[in-house]
Structure formats: C-alpha cells, structure tokens
Image 1 (spheres, rainbow, N blue to C red):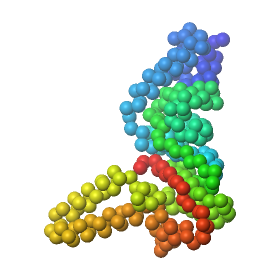
Image 2 (cartoon, one colour):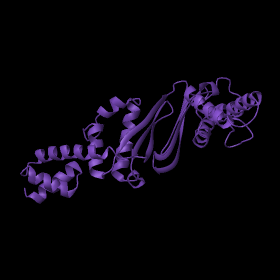
Image 3 (cartoon, rainbow, N blue to C red):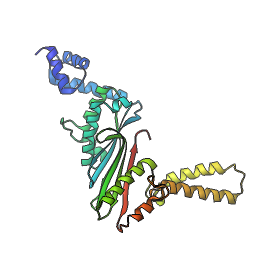
Length: 283
C-alpha cells in the first residue's frame, strides 16, 4: 500500500487531519497501528496545551423521557465550534451515555462510546482535531416514577442540543393533558425567571448571606436610624427570597399570578413540584 493510501486509511480510522496523518505514516514507516498510537500521543499533547485556555461557549444537551431525564453541559471556546458537526455528534452521544450513567461524571468519562473508545479518549481526539479546549461541565439526572418529567430547550442548535435547557419533575398520580401542559409551561417559566429553589427556605444559605452583605453595604451610609435600616433590610431580603423562590415568583405567562396560584388553580390534591434544574451557557 502506498503512503497516500495509508494516509487516506489513517484519516478514515482516526478523523485526524491530512498533515498529522502524513507525518504519522512517515514516522511509523507505513505501520498503520503504530501511526494510530503516534496520533493518539500527539493528540493528548495537543489537548493538554489547550486546556489552560477559556471555554465559555458550548451547548446544553437533554436526553431521556418522562420517567428519567438528564441534562449535560459541554463547553468550548467559540460558538463556531458549538455548531461543528463532529462536536454535535459527540455531545449527542455523550448525553445519551450521561442519562444511562445517572450523571455520574467519573463513570461517564470511563464509558465506551460507539467507536469502542472511552469518553475521555474521544474528548482528547476531538480537542486535537478541532483545535479548541472542550470540557464537560455540569450535569443532572432527574428520576420520577410517581409523576412525570418534562423539559424546555431555548436557542436550539439541533434536535436536543441548545444554549439553554431546563428539566422539571412533577409529582402526581394524574398524568392528564393539563398536568403535561403545566409541566411544559413551568419549564419555560424557569428558563425565563431563573429561580434559585422551589421555596424560599430552600435557597442556599451562602447566597442569602451574600445578598445580606450587599444590602448591609448599600444601607451602611444611608444616614437613617438603626430601626429604619433594620426595617428596610428585612424588606429587601424578603423581596429577594420571594423573587428567587419558584413558588412565589410571578408566573411568566400571567404575571398578576404567582406560580403557587397556578398550581392551586389546577385543583389536583397530590400535585407537587418535585425538582428542577436549569443550565444556560455563559451564566
């Protein structure tokens, strides 16, 4: 087999560029297996050099069904790469695996993909081929056997790949069209309103403490009496909690009502918002 034919075969097997394949064939004296190993080592080296750069673009991918659904974030450096066919194919397969592995990142990275290589190996190859830093970010799996899951995608790139995605989990024995519609609308509301928790008492204490610091700093030199400052501070913190707790937020589709009002209007005794998760690229 000629060098050109070897280069062509190596490209088909690895997806690497012509220049890298040509050098690997020469270095291996035409031995395809050795050339694949050379490319793998070079790919690791290239990937390693790129990992110090910033990866603030990327995509969010959702996989699963109304019983078990997962979301995963994959970051890259540019929006151009986020739309690259090789990148999209990788993240879609990765998302399916993530759902199988219940968003366990350690298990996911060791999992075999369709080409019989691990996620980590494919990630290194993709970085070497595309020429950008690519990282696997946040992920979450919601399981629900006493209700249903739903999701919403915003700024869709292709199929289940988007720039913003939301998962919601609703608990109820009733799987009516009204419940399904509510769960979809709720995921759209969460996409727009970005709540921090379902109820105010579930908001992370570190976030509450940080907001309190900001309020204290704002009121420090107001010149008002301590009693008035305390009253204003309590009012501001109450408003912060209400605006960031899902149930007390204004319903995006009907702002004169709260989310808890919409929940009550459905008149389903066992209906409960069990969980949600939101990822937006760049936040």
